[in-house]
Length: 66
Length: 66
Image (cartoon, rainbow over all chains, first blue to last red; front, side, top):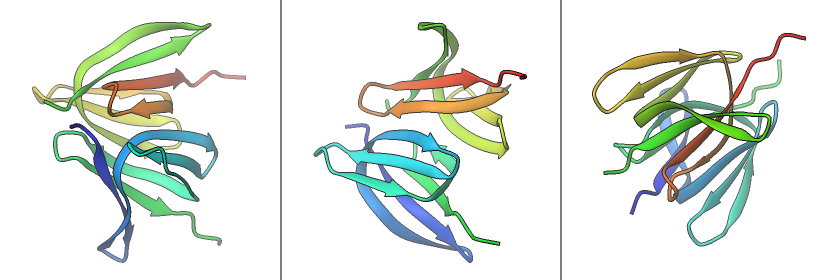
């Protein structure tokens, strides 16, 4: 299967946000709808930092209020 | 393999931008670095509209000057 895991990068560490992600759909500036292969949905407030499909890895960056 | 094809959506049609994409890395607002499994790189000026890993499909939207 070709799903990937989504991690939040923070201060050089990676924290799992969602496993077995299928769909990533930006809904607005700094708002992503993320769905896994089981149909679960989560909203992430932030940006995509990097996706590597071959490594099955999505790295996300949280929106930080300034 | 888990690479995907990237398409540009324009007026309801999809035009192939790059096949066998591995990496998608936003470089700036409206600027994406896209790499395929062969190491070829392309810059896309625009946004990710939707990614479905299970469908091996990345849909991009061009940045339109207003």
